[in-house]
Length: 474
Image 1 (cartoon, rainbow, N blue to C red):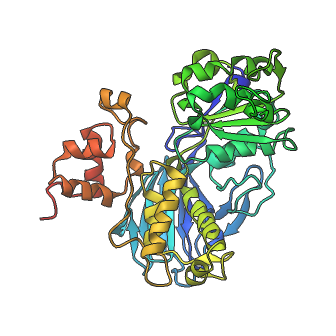
Image 2: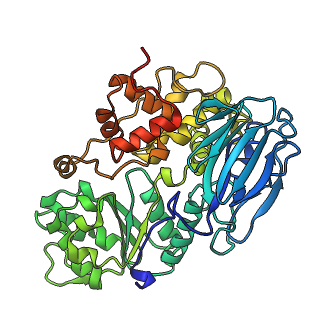
């Protein structure tokens, strides 16, 4: 398939890719918060030690520019804190130091490491187990500081984040229409703005509209505008969205919410930029690039409209880039603090541009949470922590997080499945699963369906792996 017509999908965590080896991602490190986002590449085999005098090498991994950072230097870590042993891609750990060790929130001394695990050393270090290639693909082009937002507002140092940046740069150099795909809250509008900013049209208008808000009875007027005095005397002339975007980009969010009849109205615009204002006898042309975003299956769009989107990009959900969650959380908290001096003074070291004080348990919960609305849900959880924390550090709310799970749409309800497919069990917090088991008095059938797992057997394996109780806590 030609690259211009291919849908790009970000690498999936856990794929059996030959050059992807196990890696540890630093997701919380209070003594040196600027190092969050660094990784230690374990590979397929070896013997390494994590500690102040350890042999585990931490790097800031970027395309074509990996920067070595050496060992962790927290003075409370033992010289040899954790030993890691790998054989043919399977790694085990053994706690050698005096600080307690936790795996997925449970105290441990030794055991195996698998992608999706969270390893915690007391309140000093939090690590997420992921998979990385030895080098990130792509060209050297980073101009922003490690861990911070780039010029387009994209935050993240994961493989998925850098693959997205590379794809955006490629698409921005083209002029064909683009379909942006992704779940709610993944950042599709951010992607659309990046495509405009990186393109040759950046000096012209970016016209944005939520397509779901276009009334069906006024679709032609909203899209194509009208002449003065039409349809009513005294009505001012309007260029419409298509006319406003002439020379620039028209971004239609929630494009899948447009009725098929309204989608059909855009066919000639997408082909030749041709449209007609209401009340006008002659057609006009608009040199625009259409960027449309939807969280629906692209096959739900009108088939001849879909065919006119030769370029497509899939925005990765948070469960495909969990090592980026602490960086996104930090970016979000700084944005909140920049507008709220009270929050900045109470929870930040050094003001709004400094480092927020976040408990290790809160960060762990943010990393493993099964997100439905992604960055929006992450921001909501941070606000819940802000409004419930009583000290000078952000903590998990005493009552837990209040998260609304989206209801399945009618088609999904008819099929008896969740709308976005089975949940990856690696994305689930064992505590959340235990709470569901307790709530259903140990009955596993309603639990696996509630959590969105593929089957009862997937739940049973999860229960066994994490030592959960299936008869409640009595």
